[in-house]
Amino acid sequence: MEISRKPKSPVSQSTRPSDTARPAAAARPVEKAPAQTAKDGFESGSARGSNFVDRPKGNFVDRPTGLPPGTPSALPATAFTFGSGHVAVRPFADSAARAPVTLKASATPNAKVNDLQTTTSTVSFDQDVKLDSLKLNLDLAHTYKGDLVVKLTSPSGKTETLHNRTGGSADNIQGNFDLAAFKGESTKGTWTLSVEDKARRDTGTLKSWSLDAAGQATGPGPIEEPQKPLSGPPVIAVFDGGVDFKHSDLDDAMWVNPNEVAGDGVDNDGNGVKDDIYGYNVGYNSGDVMRGSGTDHGTHVAGIIAAEDNGEGNTGVAAGKAKIMSLGGLYNGADLLTNFERGVDYMVKMKTEHGVNIRAVNASFGNEYRNPADVKRWTDAVQKLADADILLVAATANGNGSNLNDVPDMPANIDLPNVITVASMDKNNDKLARFSSHGDKVVELAAVGEDVLSTVPGGRWEEMSGTSMATPTVAGAAALMFAENPNLTAAQVRDLLVQTVEVDSDLKGKVSTSGKLDIEAAVAAAKATLDDDTTVAGR
Image (cartoon, rainbow, N blue to C red; front, top):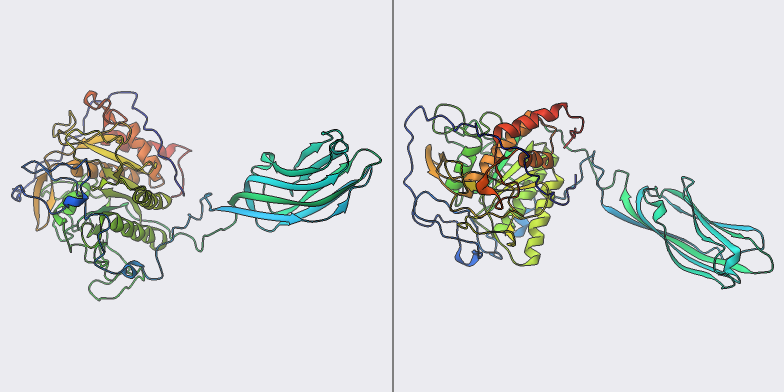
């Protein structure tokens, strides 16, 4: 399904009291890692955009920006072909969206137009295309235009009059006709042009004519095979440093590739990656998701979404309702944009060709990209996610109150309706966190992102702060919504999230909804769609 523009975020019509409690305290003492005060290894000086702010001392973790654009890959491009070739996103079998098609048909009858008679000529199309536009080019020589009636009839029998005895004694009818009346008609079949002479003592010849058609193919088009059926709990991809799948609070929350044999060094499922048991490392083209930088960041994000409700540490927003796929290595091997494209190709392939129920991807990273060509690459990659019906939950920058309305902050500010962008509330959930950026044109809502307890590698838990922590809270809420109604699309979940915010006066003019995440209301709205006849029954 192709998704185009990002709709405006409607503001909630009522203010609801916040009644979502934070997870209960851990049943056993939590081992906290020392607070980090030095650089976290994510930043690269030359890659910083104007919105980059060094993190203050404490547990603040700035949103990672990755390697500089244009950084040479540590591996050849051929390493990222996923077996038979790069992923070509195909429309779903039940989707009406098709690639544009243009057709042309022409005839040169050189037929005489006799007095008081009708001359006809035909052209045909073999392909079934639903017309968006149709143009006719005509070369009809005649002594008096005022004698002629010219009509075009479609295969369905629809007739449009192009010329009806106008022009007086002027001669010839030549040029192009824009035939908007045929919009929506099918091209397939025979089209008939008729020229009727209504007077005596004149001469003429229908020399040539042609039709230029443009529209959408209604047949199978580029679809080669049906999409694999989706089943099981929603899978949320954590695109970041790798996720510690051995952590006691995450080991049962991980997605496990059922068609791959761990440790045998073989690409068992034929997807182009060996031993991708828990996901994929985009920086090193391997199934070793924990290789590379940022594993503390990625593991922390994953725990906010789905840490198990087992009496240890924290409990994730979607505990027991969703699985985590780790896309690690984001900050290694190549620049952020290139790695993002690689990860998108993997996710789309795994969903459309291997039936993995990937419903959303958490993107707690980003940077400013001023080059239009780079912005287009970001947008094209996110459109691939949209075509595969995958929600992108993205963090805005940590700019200490900076307004990002006019900043090309990627991927957070991409204008597509499968994108929801998140700012951070303070730990009391009553005002925008001091470190968070905002923008009422580009940021939809806020969620708590200060002093958030979650998992870190080595079986530990740690409090971290940043928009990186607010974003997975929203991703977890989306997971609960997909679990409640699996038939919801990415765009529908996005719209329900923004429609059910709790309005907060501190957010007015800072986020488009003037509101913060209301998990209970969002899940209730998703449940209500089960009885809504407008719910889309495919994805």
